[in-house]
Length: 389
Ligand code: AMP
Image (cartoon, rainbow, N blue to C red; front, side, top):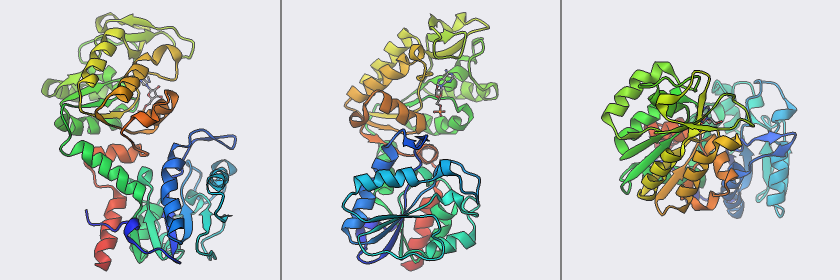
C-alpha cells in the first residue's frame, strides 16, 4: 500500500482539508455518542500544531441531497469541537464552495457535505470544487472509506496532494494486525441483525479464525438448518450457505437460547433448547450454557475480532449474552478489535472502551476491509501517490 501520510508532510501555512467522519447520533441537537468525534480530534489537533489552515468536512446522516435540513446540520458538532479546542479560532460555513479565507492555526468547519448536489454520485464538478478549497487533502474518515463519493474519493482525482490522516492509518494497521498473522487461537464473533451483509464477512473470517461464534440473526440462521425456530429473526435464503460453512469450519452455534413472545422492552425471557422453541416465540439472546461455553473459548484466545451484539441488548432481559461476552473480552489479555455501529453502543453501555485493544470507528468500512475488499479511499490515495511520484 503506497500512500502518503499526513504526518510526513509539511503543513505550515497550507490549506489542509480534512475529511473526518463526524457522523454521530444526535437527538434534539444533543450528541448521543462522542466516540467518532473523539477519534477524529487528534488529527485535527495535529494539523493545528503543524500550523496549517485547517478545514474540516464530514457528512451527517442521510439528508435529501441538495436540501438543507436543520436536523442534519453539523452545527452541534461544531459547538462541541469549539469547547474541545478552546484556544483555537474556529468558524463554521454553510456556503463554502466559492471561496474560503483562513489564517494559519485557525479552523473552518464546513456544513454537511451531503447537502451538496453531487456528493453521493461522486460528481466531477463537486469533486473539483472541493479540491479548489485546499492545497492538501487529508482522508481521515475510516468510517466512510468504503464510499465512492465526492468528499471521500472524487476529490483525490483533482487535488494535487492527497494523504491519509493518522486515524485512517491506525485503523488499517490495527485491522491488518488482527487479520494477517494473528496470534492464535483467534476467535471471531459475528452477531447482529443484518444477516445477508454479514455472510460475506463470515466466509472471509472462517478462513482466518480458528473459531467463529455466531450470535443474533446470524446464529438463528444456523439454528434453522436443523430446527424450527418459531418467529426468530433469520434469513431462510442463507440457510444452505450456513450449512456449507458449518460443515467446513469450526462455527459455534447456541446450545440454548433466551426466547420471548413479544419483541418489546418489558418482555421476560425463558431459556429453551433449540429443539423446543414454540411457534410464537423468538430467540433474542444466548442461554446460560451457551454463555459459559463461549466465555471459556474467549478466555483461551489470543486474538478476538468482534462485530455485532449477540442478542437484543436494548431489552434488559435479553442483554446478558452480549454483556457477558463484552465483559469477558474486556478482561481478556488477547489483542481485541471491535467495530460496527451497534458494537460501539454496546461498548459505551458497559463502559469498557479502555479495555478493548482497538475500537474501529467504521461499520461498513470495517466489514468490507475484513471481507478483503479494497476500500475506495485507499484506492484514491494510492492513485494520487502514483500521480506525483
Ligand atoms: P447489526 O447492525 O447487524 O450489528 O445489528 C444490531 C442489532 O441486532 C441490534 O439492534 C440488536 O437488537 C439486533 N439483534 C441482535 N440479536 C437479535 C435477535 N436474536 N433478534 C432480533 N434482533 C437482534
